[in-house]
Length: 224
Image (cartoon, rainbow, N blue to C red):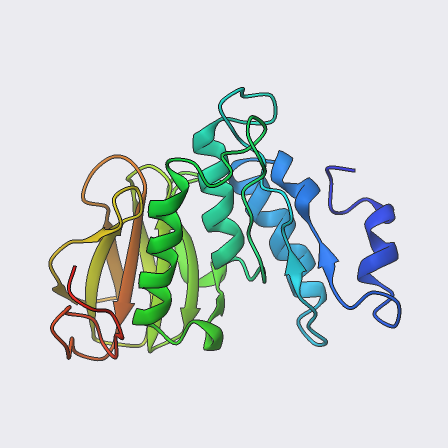
C-alpha cells in the first residue's frame, strides 16, 4: 500500500527479529508534506530501536506516471533529511535513474555531508515553522548545526538557542555554493530564513565559524 500507516507495513516494522531493515519505497508515490509526514511517523516508531529505512525506488520521472521529475527530486531530499538510510532514484521512465539531473544532486549530498556531522543530526520538524505546507524541511543537531531543504524558494522561521548562525546556501541543481553569511537571531530567539530565489535550495547553518578555504566549518571539500 502507498500509505505507510496501512497495517500491512507493520509486518516489517513490528518484527525486527525477522527484518534487519525496512523499505518505504511505496511512500514515494506521495508528494509534499504528506510524503514527509508519513516517513516521519514511521521514523519516530523506530527511534528507540533504529533499523535502516531504505528507499529502493524513488518514483518521479519523465513520463509523469508516478510523479514528475520535480516530485522525484523533492522526495529524494525529504528522504535524506527525514532519516532514511538510503535513497535511490528509480530507473527511467518511472524515475530519473542516474541521468540528468541526478549527478548534481548526488554531488550536492556529498557536499552537505562533508560540511556537517550528518550522522549526529535528526529530523526536527518542531523547530521549524512555515506559512506553506511544502515550504521547508529540517534536519538538525539543535543549537549546533542545521540543514534545510526548500523545494521552491520560500521562507521559514527556525527556533535555535544560538544567537548567531553561519549560513551558506547550496543550489542542488548545479552543486554550487553561494557565499557565506552570518545570521543574527531576532528578539524572540528565532531565525528568519529566506531562500535566495525560486527553485530548490539547501541551507547549511552552523554555530561554528567558517574555517577553511571553501567557507564551510570542518569541511573536507576541495575548491569548487
